[in-house]
Length: 170
Image (cartoon, rainbow, N blue to C red; front, side, top):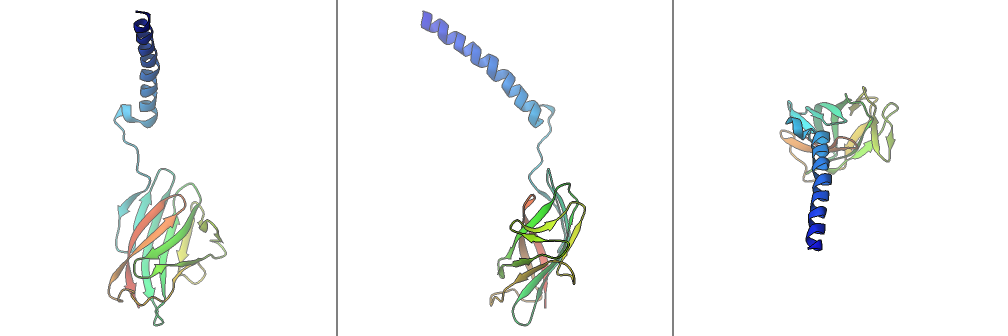
């Protein structure tokens, strides 16, 4: 009989702790009000070479994305990235299925570190411009034809993985 009383007391104790804990969790996550949590990075569709990506701590505006092929078979991705968020962002990796992984190079305003190319809050980095940082691809025989498009994959330190469809020229 005592074991049954102890089990009943334990069950009540668990309910007393579990119910408030679940309610607190629901309040903290916004579920009790019917709100849903935002995805890590929600892209807004744009024109070819353009994309707006917003997350809980980041907001990037990408525009003018073009993959420029050179006669030697190398390529360069030209794209403007505006950091409209409140935290510093780093572009750490860029690749395309046909061209492989790019080499990133910083500039005076957008320095390159082990984290990637720095883009400060409220600032814009113009990759492929005269004074800006660069995204260069090595020669690759299977690269797309000049009249096609390419899917560029960009990885940012805060925003994460971004897919950007760009025109291919050259």
